[in-house]
Amino acid sequence: MLTVELMKLEFAFLADAATLQDNGMFAVVGGGFDVVLGEKFPATKYAMALIGRVRFEAEECGKHYRIHAEIVAPDGQIVPPDLWIAFNQAPHPRQPNRSNVTTFCFNFQGVQFSAPGDYVFRLSDGTQTIGQVILEVVPQGGQT
Image (cartoon, rainbow, N blue to C red; front, side):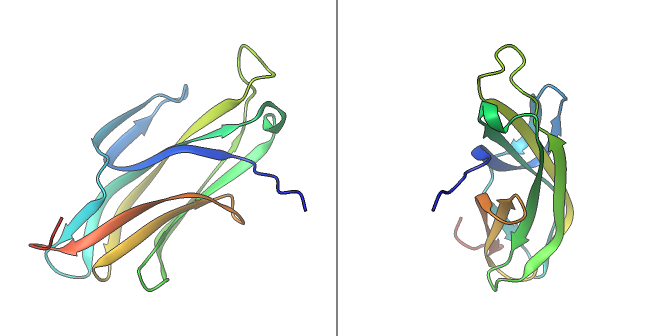
């Protein structure tokens, strides 16, 4: 059986805020955190961004793709919101036979974490997982 791996996740991380330009460059505030402290539960993170980059081989360019971001709670429940982006992957601008990348930014607002534990930000194409980022939510005063 032949397995076709479409997009390859190069990196993904969480930030307090981020902006993304059309050319793939981004600006980040408070990037790289992996722990959130909650005074009480449910704990709310009022703003955060998930920034990532996926690479496509030359033969995968020129096609339409979607990336899905969802947060999976420690009990397996999906934490709202789940977000989608859709895009047409452009070929490399100077060398069409070369791989190319797309940078993405999902902005989350008002996410509620019902209990302490590990929350998984799962990235997929809707059917196949392409990567994940783990966020540890701990009570205020807990070990970080």
